[in-house]
Image (cartoon, rainbow, N blue to C red; front, side):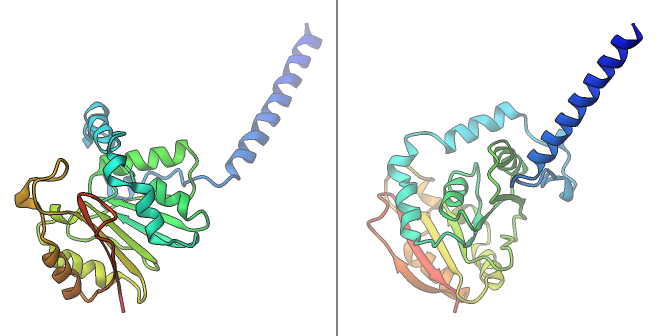
Length: 238
């Protein structure tokens, strides 16, 4: 019996060593940090909306038919990314563009910012579960886009019409951008369209241009035909 016990103990010891080695090897791979991005802001999981409610909104943002008019691949191709940039996806939502942008900058990084902690939780969880090392989810403030230092490109899609004080918000965004960085602005066009917010929430193109230039940005590129229902403008900080 003693011999059997010792043999079993030895077997357990070997399994423990193997398991420990496997864990150490797995932890050495490039994976997103385990630290919850909400904890540092004091957000308690119990205060978040239920998963079921959030999943409905995520499903809406990620619906398959959206790609037909949002044309995410064409949008990212139009950005002309080199692969090593740091991109700030402001108002990232479900990460619809965040993870696509991450594939376009394999040697860079995407900082996905959103003011909704549920969206930050979702992006962080997906990045961890899929081991997408170059996506970082960050909780932003409603009045501060939270542009990370050194960002080469700031991406804002269908967000500005939700911002109460767009002028102040863009001013803060531009102020935090480094010289030479680009700002991509996508917003719904005016007129009756099958997609987009109510007409009263839409921002005319002339107003978008005025807001961005008043913030100190210079229009670099505009592709009116790229998207059927949205404007696509790229500004640059001098």
